[in-house]
Amino acid sequence: MASIFSKIVRGQIPAHKIAEDDNYLAFLDINPLAEGHTLVIPKKEVDYIFDLDDELLAGMHVFSKHVARAIEKVVPCKRIGVAVLGLEIPHAHIHLIPINRIDDINFARPKLKFTQDEFAETSKKIRGALK
Image 1 (tube, rainbow, N blue to C red):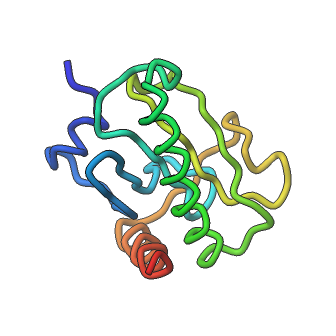
Image 2 (image 1 turned 45 degrees about the vertical axis):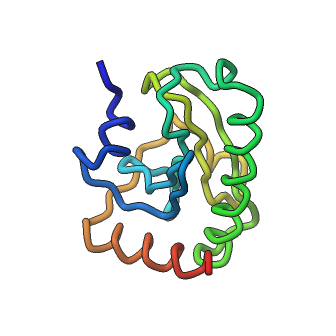
């Protein structure tokens, strides 16, 4: 059965996309810890990040770096926190989260709520910062 992320890749489920190439996709998390909280996935459906082949894993981190730099330009923060949990969705993914203190990346915290218009505006700004 295809993961929700594979359905996003195929366009069966909408997402606020940030960046995309032949191998990877970055989009806003719908249950964010911070404005600009982004997920980066390989388009190839692999459950566990360390089961990715070395080239795909390395490329995913380089792709994430470019996305993180764009997020930093748009969302005021000290850093972009990186988290790999891999328990909630059976599809390898990296969380990129704007943070100012260590508690900002605590997944037990209540998630923020944004309107679709707010998500669209944030994704547009981040995409613009990629150029």
